[in-house]
Structure formats: structure tokens, C-alpha cells
Length: 408
Image (cartoon, one colour):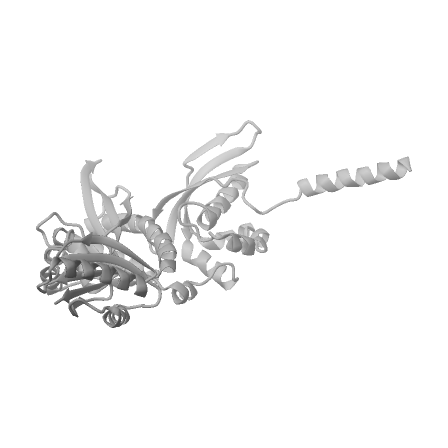
């Protein structure tokens, strides 16, 4: 009996030792940092690697860089618990050195740092360019994550308007047509968003801005922000304002430039800020447009992750609309109060949620969320059918996101 118990004990010990010593292809280090987005499909990552020799540490750093794009940072490819479980089946094969090399498009020649650790191992830091689109395709093909097309079909993707930021009194459309660098910036952002399959709109007619400003005179906030007014006029879900700054100096007899780009994303209906990010280029002896493009890619990649998270959460509440009612008829105090109560009741009836923005004797301004109506026409028909008075409802302005009425 004693020999039997001893044999079982030894088997358990050997089994545990074998399990603990099992070789894995996963990175030893998972230390990495996002440096910049170098194109719509590539990102620059600085990753640490650990190994007995420098070549082993380099292999580990490559794996850590790819691991970061998959799981790390603010916008990883694999986010949901179900996606992580799906990846478990593939992880050992995926992190084989030969496979990892397919996703690395560039690798720095030298190290950012190299140290010898207390356990006699070497730790290095190195920069890599990772093709994020190749990784995305692998995950979709193996049913680890859903394809963008499937997500777009399920929840839709927001339409986005892009305009340069301008001081008060300066039309963003004028800057877009008169400033070559601003125009280049819009083109770069458009291309970046289009590559991610977003519906992008850059308004080009001053008449669009003039028409909306005339229509919404007196509504709080609209008269001070041309970008907001334009976003409402064309019915975009999100609008992005960007600003490009180029710093120049002489370095070793050469003129070098560095771009800093600020990108701010807003929700159109309320003009709420969703995120503001700043991207930078490297300092290099290149034309303004080249360093600006580098900074733009960096900024828009960061801010777009905020937009995506917002949209996936917001769309579950329903499509969002701004609805404004102007009282232009000759109504007494009791009738005005009855109108206010009636509008409030009607909006709650046709929507999932109605949020009052402003209510005065002459104006009622609301934001509503309606799952039932994908566009303003369906919402308009429901409102007109449900409103019973006093006065009659007359539509005076209609875009995809914004409905304005008169009550006479």
C-alpha cells in the first residue's frame, strides 16, 4: 500500500513538473506601446522582448508587438470575452515565429534599449510596424471576430463629416477651398475613414451653410458653430474638426519639419465632444504635406477608436434626432402650456427616449432616440399623425438628423 501511494505521489509530481515546463509560443513579454499610426492599415509599436540571447529577445519582442495590436491599447482588435475565447484555440499556432513574421512589415535595425536582467536574461526594446489589416483579416477568416460588414449590417456605421477648425467668423468651407494644407488634411482623413468603410461627407457648397444658418436663427448654440450647423444640414452622425500645425527649425544645416495635428470628434445632434486627440509626425526634412499626413494618421486613428466605442453603445438606444418646434401662431398662455405638454407627450410616444434641451414660450428643442425610425421622414409622419393641437404642425426644415417645425 505504501509503495502504491508513493507511486501515485511521484506520478503527480512528474505530471505537475511537465505541465509547468511545457513550452509555449506565447510572448514572454507583453510590454508594448503604441507609437503612431503610419497609414490606414499600419501601426508603429515599440515592444519589449526577453530571452537568453539577443536573438531570442528579438523574437519575443516581435510577438509582444503583435500581441499588443491584438489585445492591448485603447483599440485592440480582440475586445469581447467571446472573441478572446475564440482565439484560445489558435493562440499556440498563431504565435509561432514563422507566422508572426507575416504581420511585421518593418523592423528597426537597432534597439531602443538593451539591458541584462538579474536572471541573466536579456531584455530589449525595439520598434516595429504591424499590418493591422492583415491581422484583422486573419481573425475574420477564422471566425474569431465578426467582419466589419456584419457589424455594419447589424448596427450600421456612422456617417462622418470632416472640416478644418476655424476661429469664429471664418467659414470652414472658405478655409477648405483657400488653404491647400487644410484641403490636403480633409483628403487624408477622408481616405483613412473610407478605408475603414465609413460613409464620409465633406460639404463643398457655402449655400449649405447659409441655408441652415438662416433656417435655425435663434436656436442656442447653432449660430456660433458653423461645423455643427453644417453637420446638421447634411445629416451626418458625427463630425470631426481638425487643426494642423507645422513647426520648422534648422538641424545640421537642413530645414526640418514636425507636424502636430489635433482631431476632435463630436456627436452631431447635441454637439457633444466624443474625444479629442493629438497626433505627431517625426521631425524630418520633408514637405509640409508629408509630415501633416503622418500626424493626421496618428490623430485620426486615436480619435476613431473613441467614435467606434460611442457608436456601438449609442446605436442600441436608437437613432438620434434633433427636433425643434417654433410657435409662430397667436396663442394665449393656456394654449402655449397645452402645446408644450402635447409635444412632450407626443415625443415620448414616438421615441424610446426624449431629452428636453430648451423650452420657452416660442421654442421647444429636444433630442430623441427612436429605434423604430431610421430616417427623419418616418419620424415626421409619426409626429404629424400623433399631434392633436392646439395649432397645426408644419415642417420647415428636414435633414437626416434634424427636423424643424412651426406650430401655427
